[in-house]
Image 1 (cartoon, rainbow, N blue to C red):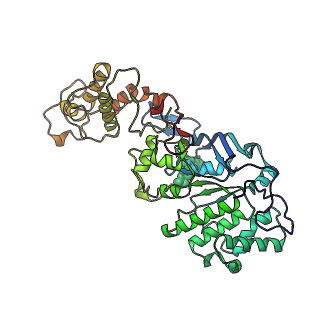
Image 2: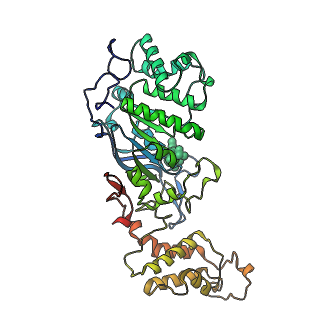
Image 3: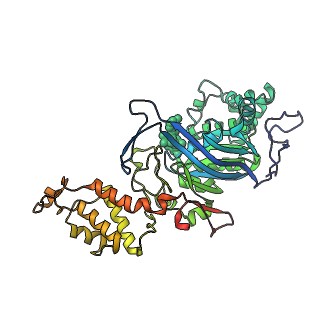
Length: 469
Ligand SMILES: Nc1ncnc2c1ncn2[C@@H]1O[C@H](COP(=O)(O)OP(=O)(O)OP(=O)(O)O)[C@@H](O)[C@H]1O
């Protein structure tokens, strides 16, 4: 691989090879930062409508709030991508991957933050300057079908970006398109065919050729193989790797499928609810994950396609709304390893039991039973000592089937009768436990960001989890 960046916006001399022979003035060595994202935010205004501005959060009081709300799709993201590498970006559906990719490309206007590309902040550019830059940064999308105009011949499709950027003359563009067809593994004689004559994998290759036609340095690949058969995916990924090697390309590769991410990435960033929660070299991330969210994702390999209806529930609990995300660590409301609040003295076992009970009450995962039974089931009969024990006791009373109704009487009902017992106050018990424990955890109070020593490789391992304080 050459060690310098090729600048696609320059002219081409006739003697040059059509593909990538010239050098840029802005040389960035292989391995140096090509793109740096700093404090990047992208908030969307919520859709207008009757309930616009009204948000519901069962964990807060009051649960309904009114105001001008924003979907915090990307919220303070920081990372760099080095020249020649592939940074994989993975996370559940809706966590903000596509929004991040599109904001980096300035297809979406950033709300805040900077996007330094070769040292220049793309967030500051507009008009012609931005248009010029767009040839250096390209994007390929998931659906190769809908991103190709069915009326156009593939030769024209590949030439379109070159025409838009005033690159080469007609003959030059045709020659380059044919050369690119070959490079992406298609027959240059198919230059005059229409997209429908190609399979899904071949169409994605056409997309690749089109993106590469303007000789970019950096390509954002948004789920480029998700729509393809698994057998075809590896072939397209291999071609992408070959092209990367040949043209010194840098990729931001977005996928929900961890096996795809593992195939293609050098480093991997894991995204959750608008934040990057972990970033490490590929081997380090897969062999030594340090964020409970990453662990949960890895435990669920293969991650089901989030677009399929039954994919929910891989991780316990719902993803909170990006309109009103949890304070501190965004994953804390689903985290199986929430940290005990410092203000109480806990043994590990006491906290472990309390945390499990709190989660069960919050999710109402057990049917009401007598207080003594709850104590036995969740605490092995021994409540935590001191204040936490008293709080837990009160919460147990709120959800126990032998609880008095208000100050009145209950008791004597059969198990069948107590299900849905109006005396059982799940909400108050949940509020009591969350306010007393979960909200007082460091996980709720500070946003975590830690560097960890890697066990594999030499790169920095970033994990946004207070377990590493
Ligand atoms: N134009 C928009 N207006 C309002 N909200 C939006 C808009 N685009 C995205 N969002 C919201 O921003 C959040 C992040 O969406 P995004 O598409 O970036 O996630 P993703 O991780 O790429 O998901 P997927 O894998 O399903 O594409 C979601 O809550 C989504 O509903």
